[in-house]
Image (cartoon, rainbow over the protein chains, first blue to last red):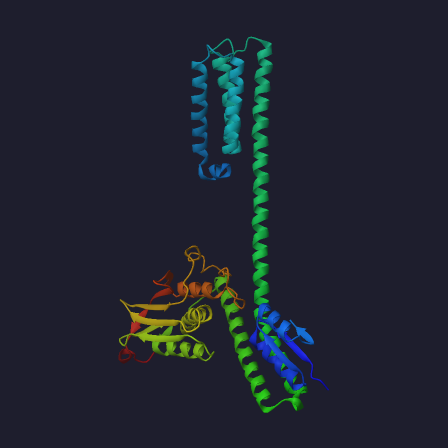
Amino acid sequence: MNKAVILIIDDEAQIRKLLEITLQSNDYIVEQAATAKEGMILASSHPPDMIIL
Amino acid sequence: MTSLLINKVSKPKQYLFSILIVSAVSAVCFGLSAYMSYRVVAFILLVTVSFIAMIFDILPVLFTAILTALIWDFFFIPPVFTFYVRSSEDVILLLMYLVIAMINAALTYKIRQAEKVARQKEERANRVKLYNTLLNSLSHELRTPIATIIGATDNLQTNSSKLTAQNRYELIAEISKASLRLNRQVENLLNMSRLESGFIQPKNDWCDINEIIYDVVKTIEENHISQKIHININPDIPLYKTDKGMLEQVIYNLLNNATTYTPAESRIDIMALNHADVLHIVIEDNGNGFPEDAIKKVFDKFYRLKDAKTGGTGLGLSIVKGFTEALGGTVALENVAPHGARFTINIPAKTSYLKNLKNE
């Protein structure tokens, strides 16, 4: 089964860390961005299956 | 502009100026009475009353209205130099003059009241907007660590089988950091309330400045800051009888600001010495400094610089000022060359050197 890619965009590091641990432990691939700009760059280069803002 | 004059000139002065203006205008008209009919003078005096109605308060204006009516009657309406009015047409003119002058006064007064109400509404709307923005930022500051704690504990309880040991370690570290962050915000809010309520009573006891500064710096450094803090405490510094908690909070807030808002790798210096029984502390950095027009306002409650990144509530410096002043001291901010900021604190207090302390 293909692992789905989820992109997290949030300016708080603690929130990103929490989501990363939760999602990775449930077999999702996690990308992170701290700003909208970073997020858009990541989303266009590695299109995710879902984005959490 | 007109509203400023009402506020700045005292009532007696308003009456005085009105009399002077009216006298001057009347004198000129009288001097020119060969060239203009007395009825024209009435209009000139009415314009004078209107002008005075724009700049002064209602009672001086009404006084001016009556005064000009009397002047017009006595000096201009035939027979001149008496209050008697020969022609009945002129009696009507005189009465109409009074009515117009009074209406003028009343209308300008109403306009000014309406302007005042509009201005108060705008001020109130601005204040409400400010409080809302900052309440939002405050609630974000509290909710983020709470969300972290809930998320992390939920993970550990229900997701535990899927977590690695490393995950568990990280989650616990996040809970710990979030709890401390929450504690600090609540501390800030409580301090702010104490200051606002006015019930701030320092609990003075002998304080070791070395201990206080080193402890605060250690707490700050535990947050993995990128800046370097240099401590320079004069070895002859005595003990001070002051409130340890409040002093710690002041130093903590200033150092926390320095580490939060200066660029990575900046240098932060904290220096303390005694000068004539005054505790003198300087906290200085080589960061970006403050815009000149902000320096006066930084100690205001909720004030934040325009491009400040999210995560602050604007309470830190107002607490610094509130506490410092509650301890009888002062705090000042200035920019330093080539770039950076310097906070200077002076707190007068009783001093003692350890060997003199008996059974306190």
